[in-house]
Amino acid sequence: MYRVIQLPLDADTRELRRALWAHRIGHRITEEADGQVLWLIDPAQQETMLRLLERWQRGESLMPERRRAAPSGGKSLMVPFRQAPVAATTLALCLLVFATMGVLGDRVIAALAIVPLGVINGSLAIGSLTDALASGQVWRLLSPAFLHFGWMHLIFNMLWLWYFGRQVEVLQGSGRMLTILLTAGIGANLAQYATGTVLFGGMSGVDFALLGYVWLMSRRAPRSGFFVPQMLVVFMLGWMLFTMTDMAGAVGFGNVANEAHLGGLVVGLALGWYHSGRARRPR
Image 1 (cartoon, helix red, strand yellow):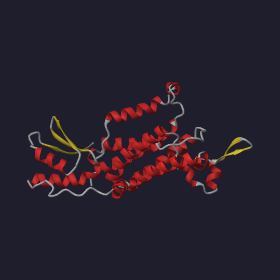
Image 2 (tube, rainbow, N blue to C red; image 1 turned 30 degrees about the vertical axis):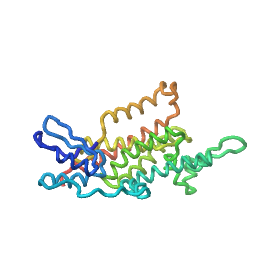
Image 3 (cartoon, rainbow, N blue to C red; image 1 turned 90 degrees about the horizontal axis):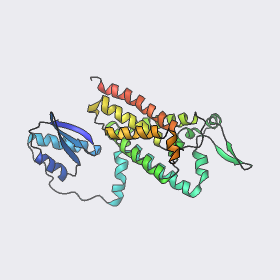
Image 4 (tube, one colour; image 1 turned 120 degrees about the vertical axis):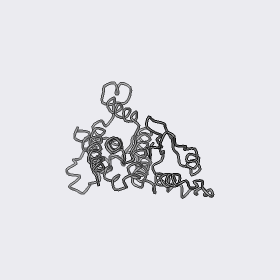
């Protein structure tokens, strides 16, 4: 949830809450020591909520005059692409690559791995990243992020990509999200490749970068609108540390791109520190 405004403890918010639900704006009001805090569930509705708040403070009528017709199926499918085009397009590409892997198999992996892969005389042939880049295969710096090797791998990565990525796009624009995606995706892939691994994939490096970015923005620039539950931060960082231990391999989680996770997190923290610092400067 996203903190919107703090109201006095004695403020009667019943009419405001009825109007917010009538406008289908998911929210929550909590009581704290110094006032009532209004939280927003979907950041895409922030402008609508702020307009209703202004009308409520002026004492104007808030209830909608009529219900709008529900969007058709085709239009509703486009809503994510209007809300967060970079995150939605990235998610769609990951799904497309996963489906194509089901049809074409290892040929997709060979085309998108960080280095060219092939089979010569029954043995795996591994190309060089330097040679691949020199021949124009620059997509290999990023493309492993779109590879996923199972449904659970795909679902969890897409869940966090949408949860964090939509926040970034709604609050700071698609350009910022694209910057994080490219910087963290390439940084995470190179970090994993530096360990000597060539067969890896997944959007988790970008996910950890988004986690670090959103967390720092919420902590260092609270007025920016970013929010992430502290327990989610603890869970994701705890999971990253757990997969680095021998215990993870013993329970079936040994084949994890740990260096990619760490590389993505470092990139996200660096970008978050820089942009949160800029957001704190007086204008």
